[in-house]
Length: 576
Image (cartoon, rainbow, N blue to C red; front, side, top):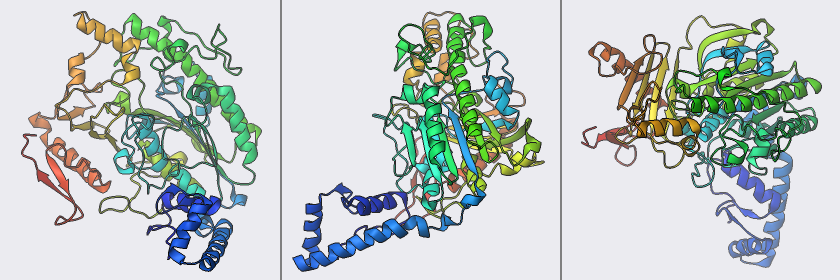
């Protein structure tokens, strides 16, 4: 007999997506994954049934099956159905900046004006030690939405165009889990930058896939209007709304006509258009704070001026969304989170696992715990803690499934809800990071462990120079560094480009003495016990997350055939 879907796991996202489309449109063959017309599908069934009479019976039975799927489908019998009921309605708004950093008074920068984030923080817990698990856009967003590090969920690099990285077909992301229950209204507005769609499905979707990214990610009036449309359509369902701002990402590589950060886009000046809800805040070179990892030169200061102006648009967008929540009566029943995907697009920032590349803003407002509003938390947390936090908020379990390797797919992160109620007295003192690529040409796999005193980084491709991404390369800051270096001039930077390009196999920093991560003590005899302990803990984490790079660069991982499923590292004798 004809097998509609030959797959043992009928709850995986890919199979659910294909089976649902087969039944809904009668046009997808789940086995082959190709489009079939009604006639060719009938011919296929006829091949297996042998007669028109049997064909009629099969089609009738299949139609009944599809009707039953539509009426009593997997979402109705899925174990997630024991989630919060509509009468116990609670919602989530997650706002993610694009390459956003600590340029706000909330984190001590009083030069960059962010009145709406400042006000939001008064009703929130502000995390001083939040870190991304990977310093690249698509991989970080995949980790935010799956709770899994990039090497475990498969999004090794950027999603778009020729980079073309995707999460594994069997990954069960947060929106997929919520959609399976049938009880939640899910939406995404702005930058999505992850795929495939059946792994990251949203009921309400307005992203770069159907709008120009510069519009859907930076036009805060459009974002506001779409958010209000989403809220008006939620009905009685609890909702999860994900906002992917495109600010303050650079745009000199793609839209230089609007400025290096698109800081002139929509400001009302000639040819720039108008974003009605944006009231730009202007700065001069004297108005910016230059952090230690950026050279203090006129070119870099002008770059920061443009970034600050764009941040004002992001900040005002946050204000519009919070006002929409209030207008629709959801100020008291919505968990609101603001963060970013990776470090700012400057040297030592995005694509690096140094602190400027890993450190993230994280501000969370829990309406159920007002006693904590306006307070700071010193807990060290990872953005992979977002999924367990939201599942905890919705009272949903994480699914039981396996991707690759011997270990079941489990969340390494933890719910932050207890911290939103009371500052922890102990624990919460270690985070891990995993980075492989940004752009497809930027292969530089790194793994890192950071605790309160030490940072250990494993650079697997350390024999090669660290690569520079396209939009940072054309930035005024990098061009200034490059030109000054090539001309033999003073760079006014705390490192040299050669030191930035060529890194040690292992980097160990004592952050209590060296917060700028310039003195590598990995080979220091007095730090060897610490180095060995941190390296073991890092390897244990890689093993727990089924990291395919666990043997790199000195060995090959073998885990099939005559080798145990847990895997063994076989030596290459390559001198590494």
